[in-house]
Image (cartoon, rainbow, N blue to C red; front, top):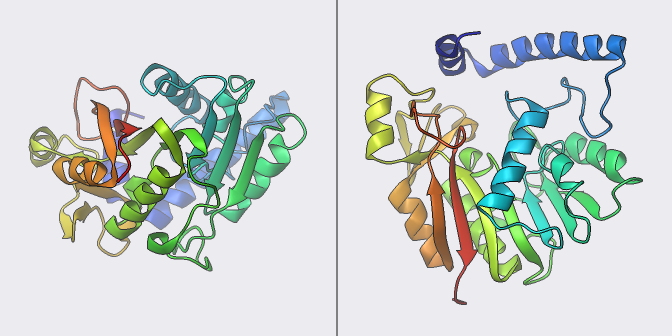
Length: 282
């Protein structure tokens, strides 16, 4: 499918219709894999996967490289994956964290159950648990709101934390709380990688010219959203707001790599990537 056609589908089709089309395609691909005997024990069936349209394996491998190259991830590190989904990022790390360890948190019960079963016998240094945070789509009966959730980990426990396509679905109060918890659980000089939809002059110009896959036309407090009826579906933040918030929380921004989502021809990934380092205690 041509890139332009994908953009139109992404922008204009209702979420329900997109999900139905995705399920039909994924069901056919899963059936083909079963017939051909193709099975990776750390790759979930496509019909179970809720973490996006990109290729599960290729996206995980891409970010594994970013973790190492830009984030300084090392095999001995203790790692926290916020929004671990079905283990898309865990899979490549399973062969890398040979003396380190991994903790995955997600709000989707089915994803956590699948990962617990898939990793329990082979990779005993990998652990997954439910973050029982309310979300109208993924965890409608969750006990906690994002802005009040406390990570189930001790202070200064992790060397490296990452969130891929998490803050792109969270509103400001939740983002502020999560950043505070990331700061609490990171060790001194610990690092993190976070993806965003960042609004700056270049991104806004590309949106105005109709080159972006998303337009974020609706202001909502400190952010702008794609769909005011379902604000968490896709959320963008002014770059200045994000960098200021990070600094106020106690982080140093080490690197910003811009993404292709808004129509850039030069980019590292689809979403924008920020590398942070824990600075002085607040």
